Length: 99
Image (cartoon, rainbow, N blue to C red; front, side):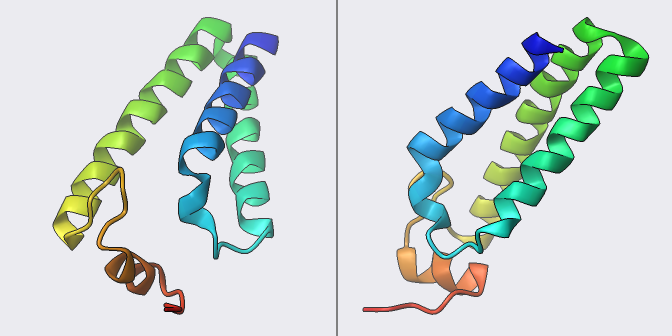
């Protein structure tokens, strides 16, 4: 289970380091729920199907989420890495734009 948790931790640290600035208005409890849910799913997959399947599950879900993220951003007219135009990104997230 250590390898799976290390992989999830690496994704979390990488994601927060590079993309945390795009979550400035997200409530504090939302990432906690998201990551708790992810850890419980991976833990369940590892328990029932083994560690190798759990690692492939993490890899597959990462790739799937990137594909969905890029498609959704392009459809909404937002750059998927830079979140520009910024005002449009804030409106899409339902946040208040401050000048």
